[in-house]
Image 1 (cartoon, rainbow, N blue to C red):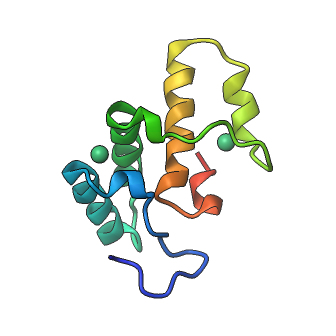
Image 2 (cartoon, rainbow, N blue to C red; image 1 turned 30 degrees about the vertical axis):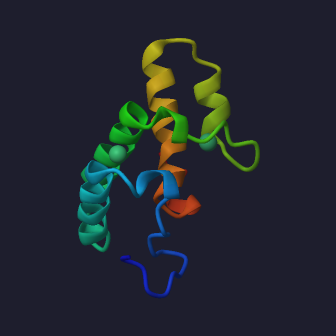
Length: 102
Ligand SMILES: [Zn+2]
Ligand SMILES: [Zn+2]
């Protein structure tokens, strides 16, 4: 769709569970547009939408090489749970090395 030759810093093909959602497509296209520049806001919007609209798509806790999952898991408040879900959702539409920075 938007990726021709995925290298390490290119956007991967988004997870199939997002393809049928017009809002996801809109957000992912906006992210792809902004990817080369500052796309922080687009990343946040996309992750937030996925957690709210597609909770069944959000991956489980990362078991390997994730510094953030254990930190989020150790906190019990709702805020942390939401931010943690957004952290995991980033895996669905960004390369792991970028997704796991937040
Ligand atoms: Zn969606
Ligand atoms: Zn993680």
